[in-house]
Amino acid sequence: MSDSLQDIANRMVSTGKGILAADESTGSIKKRLESIGVESTPESRRDYREMMFRADAMKDYISGVILFDETLRQNAADGTPLRDLITGAGSLIGIKVDTGAVPLQNFPGETITEGLDGLPKRIAEYHDLGARFAKWRGVIAISNGLPTWGAVRSNAHALARYAAICQEGGIVPIVEPEVLMDGVPGDHSIERCQEVTRWVLETLFTELKEARVDLTGIILKPNMVIDGKHARKAGVAQVAERTLAVLKATVPSTVPGIAFLSGGQTTEEATAHLSAMNAMGPLPWKLTFSYGRALQAPALKAWGGKSENVAAGQRAFNHRARMNGLAAVGTWAAELEKAA
Image 1 (cartoon, rainbow, N blue to C red):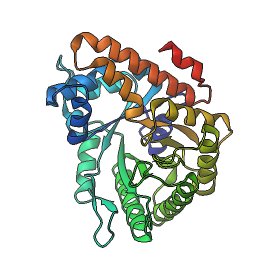
Image 2 (image 1 turned 30 degrees about the vertical axis):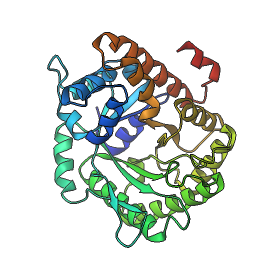
Image 3 (image 1 turned 135 degrees about the vertical axis):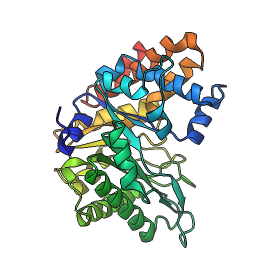
Image 4 (image 1 turned 90 degrees about the vertical axis):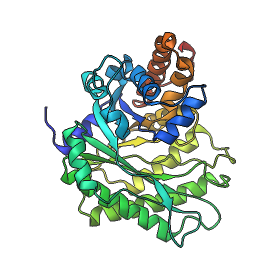
């Protein structure tokens, strides 16, 4: 099977499929597991992810899985490498390569994402371990006076450098600039989100061009244009229309696909917004999902950390993945949720 950047990117946005973001850091997954009363250990983290990787939805609705470093190296309970479960289902292996956001000096309230030092060497190792795409997240906060040009450009520049390093190593970069819906104070309007998202994406594609990144071998993972978590008024159609307006104004048609992050939306909101956008086609790129909580939350709750609940957890995951698979082709409907 071809391993060209373009072929990998196109497989990542295969019709009716999307990407499972299972790349929570050890700290983030600890909070998720504690929410269901489960201690976070290497074994509990493995068992939780193994449950999803063995689900039927992996073959039908998941094109790739973003992993944390620990998971890429772990074996299932029966000794099978977890990465073999993923590739055995026909999905691609992805890897989170940034090392997290830290305060940006001289820019209060803003961050820069780290992880560029030594990245070429790590990319080579991850490629040897089977990874064919990677992810790097830049975080942009909205509040009074934020974001600043310094933060927007610094994060766009880091994303472009990361993308160039990935492509040199034969790995497709997922480029993720996230304008936070749930930042502080989280009361911004949808109009403000639209303005900032357009600015961020314009800056990003300028930096990608200057870094000589091949846009036919990337996947964009942006936020949707949505009002802040404490100002939620916009309806599904408005979110879809404003998001598409920004994407059409900023994203070149040479980009194979856009895989949205869910960014604090409920599971059904994230599905409804994606489906509405795809129903407004035709579009110059594939639109799909790269969800974490919006794919996993029902499965985590149904599983509850108990081996006897693995089947229930898989049913919940299968349902959520199917709903988002339908959304990726614009045919999801709210009444289908009743079949859960």
